[in-house]
Image (cartoon, rainbow, N blue to C red; front, side):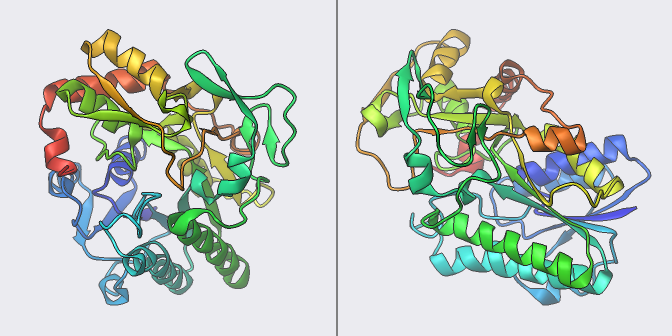
Length: 355
């Protein structure tokens, strides 16, 4: 088996590549990365030491893909993963679309030529912002929770299901990912290619390139350890907004299953997340940080940003039913690994975030 992992020098791509190398040592891994993100060079050196063939290239440039060896599967882990992308001044809307959508089209054309399978790592942010905002929530201690008896289409007791609305607005970022999903599924049907879409919750783990708009759990812990400014934004300014947290290495079992057992009966789109048991509010994370790392002041800015929602936890039960998958790493273990990494690497945010 030979697989292509795009964005291999990013956090998720690197974690998956290392996991495949450990668990499937006879597989050949070809990694592609444009090495633009700060910190990528460090990962490239490590991956090459593991025996991963790392190619410097950009999925936005079709010509960069022409000399790659044919692979059995393409795992697309290359994306600008920020819901603020295209509007925050870091990247333009055109750059976002070129990276997250045009890049996907180039990979789908490559899959068509190779007759290979495609795994897309998508996001919870394909779900409708007005729909998520319409979920009635109430403060329960240090977090928000859906009100008892709330009935919203696509919302189960375990969280937001794959049937939840994806109607706009979902952010430019969410729109590029949803469009990529749609095209991937159409390519699969048209050209008889195995295609799987995995909609991920918030991914985390030691070594993540965290920023305030992506990798929030890692960013918060690193910032707390360095006593960098932090603030609760919107929703009463108390930090009660909730997300689920999934260690990136817990993606590996479902990705391996999808490549080794491409079941026709399984749904093409599934949520892959930490779920209710691995969800937390920023306030709860702060309580943990204070206990683990010492005291720190968190400021408050009650004004809400346009893309924020108070509660977003994915129901990943379909992944469990069809792929026998469940998250394995506890919230405590994930956060502890990040804290230990922060203590060993006090200048990590300066290296990978630049702000």
